[in-house]
Amino acid sequence: MDPLSITAGVVGIVAPTLHCVRLLVEDLQNIADAPNTVKALTNNLQSVELALNSLGAVTDSQWESLGDAITTQSKATIASCKSSCERFKTSLDRWTRHSTDGTLSWRDRATLGIFRQDHIKSISKQLQQCNITLTSVTSIATLTQLPAAGSSGRRDQDDNIDEGDGG
Image (tube, rainbow, N blue to C red; front, side):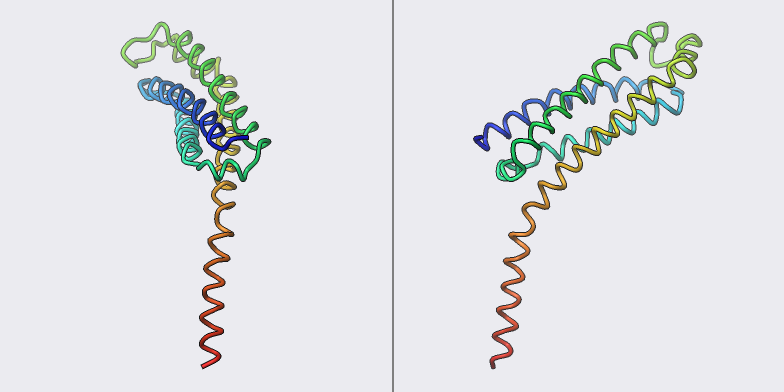
């Protein structure tokens, strides 16, 4: 597969996913006195945002070295993350429809604070898994480039030691 098309394909889905994550973070941050699970979800979303930004920095050659399987898995993870965020945003809009200006009505506070805790925890777990996968891919991509640079530097050091021993 052409490395440029790999990168274009990944970046093509990272950008809309980042946008979706940022919108959801903004909505959650606008909720004054949000329950702790909502604050934890916001933190998870911010971690996913960082992971997506890092993934967007992976180079063509790094994607090529990762191979088609990891690229396909990464795309599926990003798509899943986006879908989860979109579904949760739709639910959040419905759950907070009685609130105004970021202040939760008593009804919406009960919905978020009591009745939807399991749903919020579930999306948090999904986002944690997304974050782990994306961070792992970025780390592996970065590490695949290190051995070449590291072995070259080690050879230079070995050459210097050999030269020093001879004279």
